[in-house]
Image 1 (cartoon, rainbow, N blue to C red):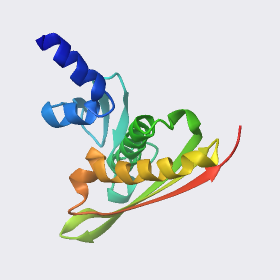
Image 2: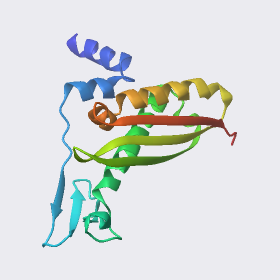
Image 3: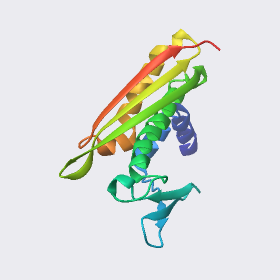
Length: 170
């Protein structure tokens, strides 16, 4: 009897399971760096993603390498995008999307040391049919509200998200 109730619960709540699980369980994401001195190092994530980073040229480092500041900006953008994708799927409009484009500008200003003061993101979301626009706009609102990276910075950094939804039949 207990298994039947559990199966019903899983079936009834399958759409919200990911968010509920995220609230109930701790998730850890690991990264590693190595450097043999100087201003250049190598980073890698547990997923296999890796690259070279350097102290930015504007702080006495070298150009041509990934800057931690770029990774921060891209983390905001990619986390917002994957959170958006989650809600598009939850609202059953993911198949109505023909494309998503996005950009980010993260600003650092002097003050109490040097810190990020704002993150501005813009999205262009292409939908196949007009009927999906309302659900897509709702997904955008939820993505901005629930993105874990944006939630982590919202008290100290001004975050702006602009999204334009465009009907583009396939």
